[in-house]
Image (cartoon, rainbow, N blue to C red; front, side, top):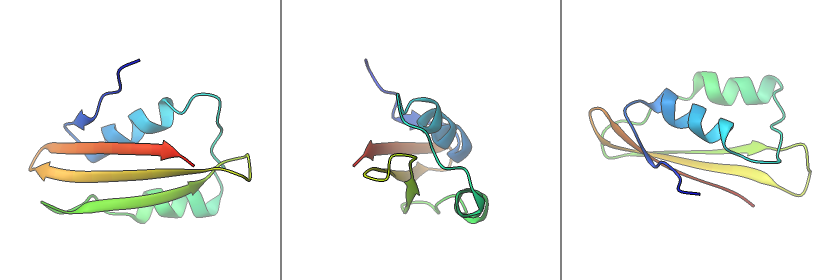
Length: 80
């Protein structure tokens, strides 16, 4: 399966990530909503790094979104 890594918005990058973490469930509690809602999109040339809890206590979702240009965001994510 080929993953998409370039997106035209920060929101699209995060949505793609959340929709493609097969067999894992995010804990969508107050902490999750605060991390997602209050994290601004990265400024040009910078990276946002998020670590979110999964229902399986042994794993976390690690997300990095790099802003390459005004309307291009690069997504990297993994579960570890």
